[in-house]
Length: 441
Image (cartoon, rainbow, N blue to C red; front, side):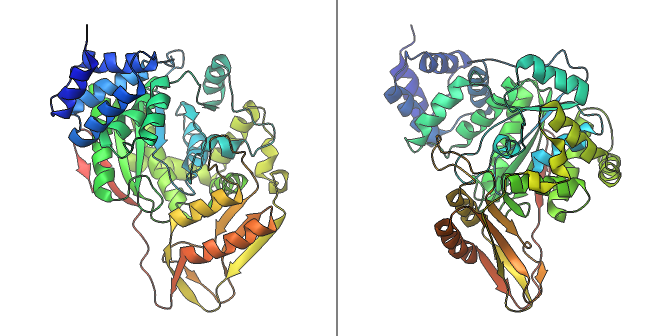
């Protein structure tokens, strides 16, 4: 019989555990045999002593097997999943899903809700009248086969070990551990059933990882876990000091996604979606060359194929696709207030974290898990770092349903921006591409 204190002691002393020992800990904790206080001690030992790649992979696989594992084998071709580590105005999934589906990539996407200052894709899609985010397994697979893409809320049965472990990490100061973060993300990706995985690891003020070095280490760890678990993983490290797109909110981000697919929208969001989409095409074996794949996707935006595919996805999930042509059919806020610059200037800094918190206070996100989302509220930026604004031009527009919340938001948004009379260099978007073989900076 395994003696749990011995396993805790081994990890405390920096000794590697076997896959069997790790599986025993995970299974015992999920089944309630191992109490919180012992698992908390183990997590703290991991926090201080770390884990080898092999240990982290064993932890990831044990967590992935703790609940339902999706079987996507009935879908022809290579299935590719994409995951973002979370950020502000991160509308990539809403653009990427129809974009790559229009080029023949099969995407079976399980997505989450927002918690804290980072938005959730499921919350955004629920802005669309009628859109069904809880699909049965049969509906989910059928839509992927017929439309090319489907998106559903993560099942409660998916990786129960992660839900339980994360709740414990949250209250025991063991959240910021690379092996624990990597196993949390990758267990969900492996349980999702995709053949290959694309990861977007963000860093900066509006991200979970604050520095490039931390983000790079997390990305490398997840690529290695993928390899040891038999899955090809490509990871990118990208900037989240400022919001990625211009819209922060739920219905507002649906509008921004539609605008990008209509060949409008901010260049950063389009650039990242096209780059990620090209990577997914190569992973899926549809195209061998990244540059050629990017050209295909650019063309599908220009000719309207990607927008048409978004409408097909919405219709297949019982939503109203006409919202992409008539934004008044989306939830509307009572108050709309623009903040303008009083002279010609350049945007010097935009604090993603402060804007994310502001959007939550407006009601666009959750401070507690049980909070209700207000789909109509949020913030739309007038530009990003390095963009020039003319006197009287709006640098932000706030959408609110309460005058008190609007007043608070005005002060928070003002505090999130810095301006310069002199030109400011635009920020780098992509910092690194990580595969098993190389790191391209």
